[in-house]
Image 1 (cartoon, rainbow, N blue to C red):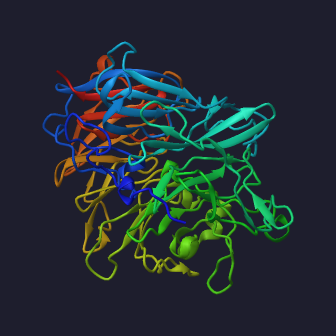
Image 2 (image 1 turned 90 degrees about the vertical axis):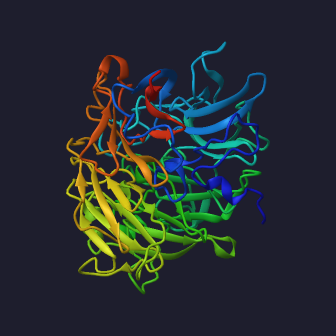
Length: 545
């Protein structure tokens, strides 16, 4: 099957081609800027370490929305909105199942910056007695409702924004895949479709050798991905409430037809009889990160707690607590390689799963391991893995990793960021740490450290720069997120010395205070602005006039 989506649409930042633009600018079309998931914008010429300070930089305005914003904002420059002219547009998806298109630069005009809005159905109120009840009291990690959680993805060639909505209709729950026209919010042809994935499998929840994706039991958390002309959607469970599995579901982005050859399940044959009461599991969560994709369209991702049977040579099919590489050759997904730490069983038993973080693909490196991925999980270990020879499973030690370094924190709950031969991590109960990339390895200890601790699940860094200069590391602190009166804090650090904090939004709180904090939120930086999703609002920061 041939697909018309061009490979360029999944790149991190591109001059806008299909629609007229005011000036050559950049776009953010996917989570963490590119399918390498490095979180870097190398085309930021407005914001520099010299002007990002509380005297010249701060909050410019706020857009109010109807739900919490867990999905990262996306951005298209120079977009022609029918009847409203050309705008730089910021796209926001909320847990109330609404999608907004705002003017990215100014809350002015007849609708105060709102260009269009669409709602995609009734969200699921939480907590409830239907799902996420394993630990008692119902699902509270995302409350008071679950709707759109995973970050959408935009295809510029067709002018389409893709997302998954979760709806509660009567006594039933549904995941639907939507394709929205980015100029007016209308559904494209063939949209929406009900997600109806199934595979051959005898695992928990299966019937007659067929395992189906149960909508009520699965959360769509990871960012959507366009790669090789396929649209991929990821699923995990709600608060470890069984039965659930990890799913990758592929669709034709032109027709939204389910592609069975591009559907993968992490634990398809794990049963209570052969695996115990916690059979299956292996959700794909990654703190909201999406699939990472290399130049050969291999897919890389992390698997959370779950049953693991794929010890070398056994032919097992369960990949709990593993880093995976799926091949897309021969028009199907197949397991090409994987890495599983030697202590997988103890990680699973203690709920210190690998899949809590997000991974990034480094640019090609010198030396014996040119293609590396970097990742950490709840165990607080930073793994550097050879993507070409991941090592599978080896008992006794992690000698099959290129490196396994102590992060110093108590677990990673999101992706790191990369810039200019440096990798930036913020683990839970830790400070921002800068690891240098030297000769195809990370420095064994950080070359620089921030001074402020990030106690509540750490933070997810993003980097802006003008090529290899003027680098800034941006972070959102979510300390106190469960208290309604606690605000997120936007931080900016000099990327060449993260001990130097340039700015934070507490320096001038009356002017710059952000909305109420959410876990796992990442700032998005483009064209001189920083966009911060929060509880029922989007805050926009930039240079003060």
